[in-house]
Image 1: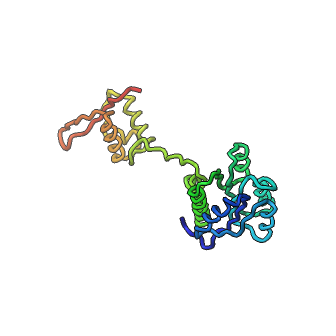
Image 2: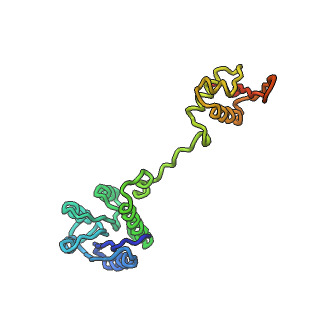
Image 3: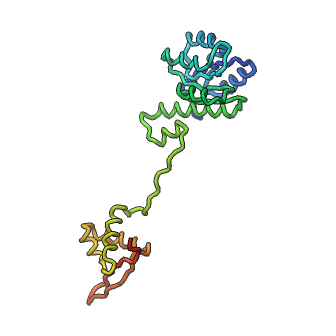
Length: 234
């Protein structure tokens, strides 16, 4: 986990006094964070927010004087640019969806697992570091930031140096006249491509056992290679 130039300020909003010191300890053990305050109610949290706005808010959903999401909405309405990690016993899909709609960074259910909180904090630091380091991101990087599965790049259907469009043109020409023999020169001329390119595609198709190869011995010089289609007709 990278360490920012200045620690991220964290506010913990949790009414369970058994959990507060545990969460505070996990946060404080990491150099990238500093706990700026702990509140046990919405009212107390709002009071703390009047003095300083945190970078990260760790908030429970069930508080003595209201719902933790009320605090999240309050921060949004006040234009406070703080991220939110929900730590709660609520597993309700309705609550989870509401939290997602408010743009929470993470949602962690109780009973707490310290490793899960640590994982979320580390991911938070990496996300912030990436956003600060780069002005633009590609889709792969965005997927990584958002924890989305990355769609693998499509595998090439042909080896390096073999273009599918050109291969299709060569294949169609040969397949259309299976009884005729095609030389490298003829392929190059009819498709308006270079001799070297024509040879590369013919050798590829022959290696794939789609062409038969014959040697035409002329009166002089090296024998001329003649290729014939022997693959499937379709």
